[in-house]
Structures are given as C-alpha cells and as structure tokens.
Image (cartoon, rainbow, N blue to C red; front, side):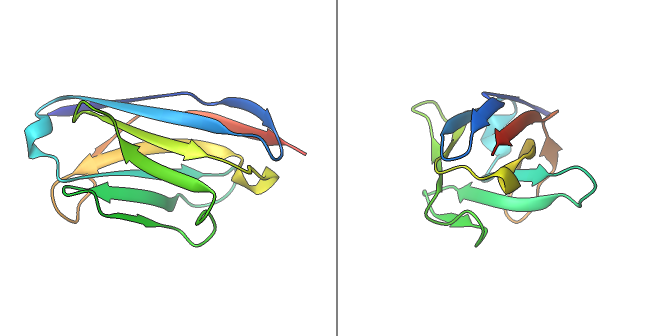
Length: 116
C-alpha cells in the first residue's frame, strides 16, 4: 500500500504563487508515476500534471507555462509549483500515484483558493 499526503494549499491573490507538496510513504518502489489533479466545486476532477520515472512530464493545456511538476531529492516527494494563479485555478488539488499508466493511490486533497 501507498499513502499520499498533500500540503501547501491556501489562499492567494490572483497573480500569486503557491507550491504544493505530496509525500508518499509505503511501497514507493512500486510507483512509476505521480500526478496532480484538481476538482473545482460543482465540476469533475481534471488532470493537471504528471511526472514519470525518468523525469518526463506532461501538463494540462490550461496550466502549461504556469505550473511546474518536479520531484524532490527524495523519491517520495513531488511538488507542484503554481505561478500566475488565476481565479479559475481555485479547486481541491489531489496527488495521485501508481505504476505505469495508472493512478492507484490518492491523497485527501488540499484546498487552493485564488482571490480575484
């Protein structure tokens, strides 16, 4: 089993920045991908960014050029640096992880609120 814990959410003004962190514990050797998703009130959960073993990344079009996903020095840490935040970025952000192509494990989420 793998446990994921997100942190770093909060309230920020439009144009500001936040960095989210995701710490994985348990069988982290089984993880080949770690990703971020978000869910705004009344909307479906959507993909934000992913990083896979080897360092390749991918982003949703809506965050390209503004968000950066990266790994920490420890394999169990993943970050989401969010710059130039917009009100439409307001959502609960979830960390997900799993083997190739799958998000088997999910964190509890962290709220990000961007005020305009």
